[in-house]
Image 1: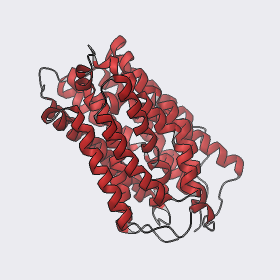
Image 2: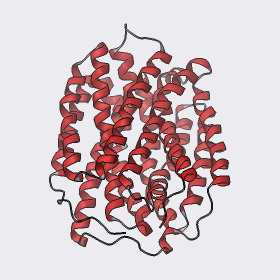
Image 3: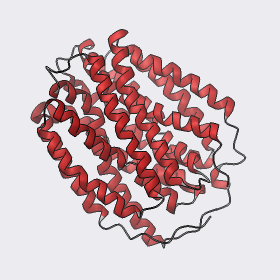
Length: 392
């Protein structure tokens, strides 16, 4: 199987950026939306966004099945056009429940990318770790773009434009993808197997269970931070920086710097045993999260950079496990099942974020996240050792 052509790879990486950008528009603009809808505090509106992240997980299973059985290219077209339409719908909502419905629809279409786009990108890759690392960088630059563009659009045109402008851009991307990416000769489920099985069924099941649990706990950290960091900076940098656009730039810089960690980790995945590397990264999270729980001002900002470097750096591992141990003809289905379980659980973070911060503050939240990172490390200890490499 040949590697994904460069044009298709570029568009798939851009799609990853769009995926994460759309999922964080609401969290970045939540204060402006809350004021418009008559909420006294942003924390009270935050639970209405949980539908997007719940469907981001639950929608992964049918998306993965369709990716393998129907084809990955047509599913990516559904992704682009569906995401764009859902964002436009969100931009015209008039109350919190309408917005919650539009966000749930947005999450449903956003669920397509990870079980479909990443397997499409890595099929035939000679160095899948490096490919996953660059793809992770793209996704996290989308997170940075959400902080940057949403802040400017909210300030200049209002929160509705923060949904509408990217929505139109996503639809345009869909037409570009349709024009430049050729149709597949056959869906993945009908292709000849190309990867030797290198784990016994029992060991493979153990690996996938461990990685699903680790992915769920890592997803909690990812959702709690990426959805809460904007308001964290408002609170902890208050009196130092107050302009929403400047705060958006500072947050975008955090994500841009942190995204480089995924490129580094991706390259290391092709050279270093997976379990050892992931344990090191996860164990380093806890002390930095504890430090961030107490820091203020620019010290908080520095600690947040370190926290996000380690949280982003942990992301590539689950995709690397699937690429290494699961044959391409069923990768979308396996990825979809894993994402449904782990992301469905980690979506609880979006529902809990507002109430927890309102009741106990960001300090308690970050200490709880330090405990979650230690739970992730404990889970990884039962991961089987590195087996022999697969042959192509």
